[in-house]
Image 1 (cartoon, rainbow, N blue to C red):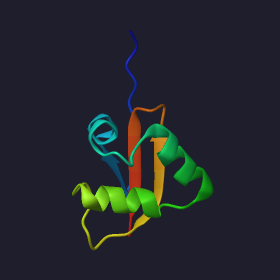
Image 2 (image 1 turned 120 degrees about the vertical axis):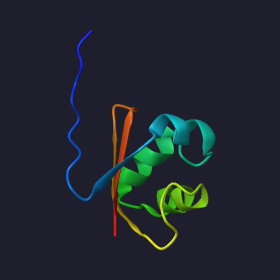
Image 3 (image 1 turned 135 degrees about the vertical axis):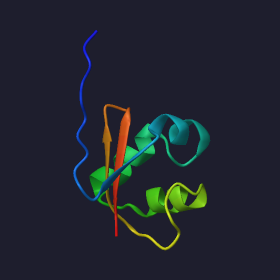
Length: 76
């Protein structure tokens, strides 16, 4: 079994995708990928703020979901 090193660029935050996708109804792989593809992050932002994963005063600038495993967000 190989191990990979994921380097998260400065300004990005890695969130626990396993926890979020299993505990926050609006954060399914399909819904998140659709939001990312359409550059409409409001659903993701609202869900993350609602569950306390990101501060209420922040705004979601960009999100990436890699291989249904790594969920990265860039906040403003």
